Image (cartoon, rainbow, N blue to C red):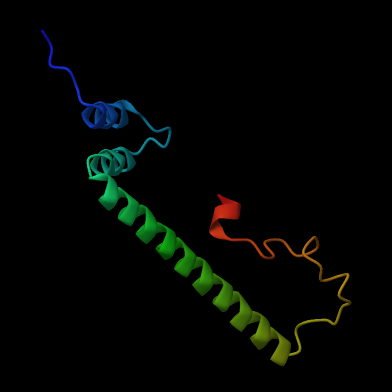
Length: 101
């Protein structure tokens, strides 16, 4: 008679059986490994990944601001009204990595 799986072991097996549509075994391997971590370490991993994505977004935003300031000082930007500069006119305005995913 097969051994009955605990809820945690069953969950790990479900993660192992889950296939991604990315065609990359690296992601499957990482998901399998992450699924085998204890719940507190999974939460820590999730937090670390979120913080890294946020830091990358901040760096990207800072780089865009530096470029805009440089272009402004060089006279490469034309003046426009607040209506012309609204978020509906500027692609990517006020978006986070989560909004783009």
